[in-house]
Image 1 (cartoon, helix red, strand yellow):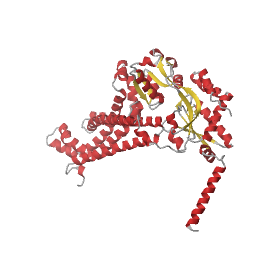
Image 2: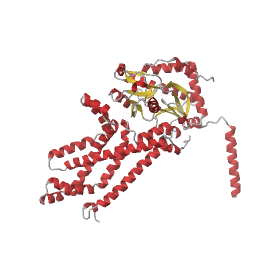
Image 3: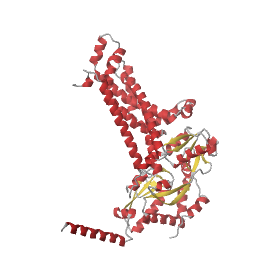
Image 4: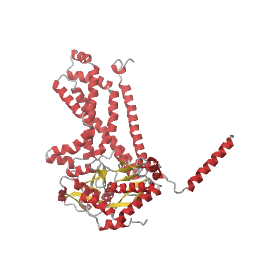
Length: 291
Length: 240
């Protein structure tokens, strides 16, 4: 074969390949293809965010976000008709979330991730699954009601979180002169509050209820003040993967519609004594897209 | 499955400022801890070679205590447990009124840990300098203190410069643990950038390059120090 003939047949091959892929629009791609090929779906999760994602007494990840992700795994199983689909779990955190999703180690992340536009440059999110915001976690006898009461006090917020950002912004805007202790994680922030090193901890309200529920003497602490930010939690997936996103969002809509979502909510949020609010219920009903 | 590279995140506001201030804290924590470590470590190391059994025992206990507990645990003990063990007022002062409590506690903790490692190097240096040198010094009428000051320690430091360089580099790398009690040093800032911007690979690459550059710079400077302080005819010069 001459060189030009070789080149010609390569072109024809490529063209055939191209038309072939274009012809079958239904062909799997992205995450669904990966799951089909490997026979495994990998759920990334937080380890220390009760009641959303944490390790249960049996050492397995559990929680509100995990339950929802398991439902999505079931939907994928049905969609791909894979009875032998293996569901694996892999712990992630704020720093490992992006690389592990992008390099394909995990297929979706079920945690307490706030959907933000800056994160959307790298990742994609399913529809909102929970809404919370920053409030203050304080000792009951501290007399602190609102953020304005924190003038000159010491307040912790975890390093690198949206909470820390909000605290810095409010501190500057309201001129409160708060001394900010950038804590590493929730247990450390709790230790600082408990040992009277700080006057308040600022994080998502629902996380604060979770921390109080776990405390030695939960009656000494409370969540106080108005909502200082808007934090819609969502399950994180890879970008440019609408087929997979569609299955995820459809699963969420079905959960809202069937009332299963309320059962999952009650199952986990009752463990931290947070009843369903009418506002949350209404916001969630807006996610109920028809089939 | 593709990563959107965006190196410009490293020099956009506010991330560039974070990297610079993080680097500043890293250098400050490391240098102050190194001063504590070198001074205290020299003292403890010398004590371990003194004729007095009490001094030797104190030195040995110190080294074993600090060497055998993980540094991270030590930092937590200093920060969270120590104030609770002290009388109430003192504990409260440590927690609330001590200026820059996170920084101070991190520096003390890292300094004390480094001291135990420096002590071992100094002890080894003194022992390598040799009993012969010490005995010769004593025979010429010098006191023990003079023998150490004029003969053993100058030799010991010269002998252990390569080992001390290693410890100096370790201080810089260990300083990243200060983030666990809230010092916003380089690693902590890098983690924050990674989380806010969702560009972790760029952020951690930058941090790695900065840490490596610091290490190369220190190694280079210490080699110069070693060359300048070399004494002809001593062990430090080997067969040359």
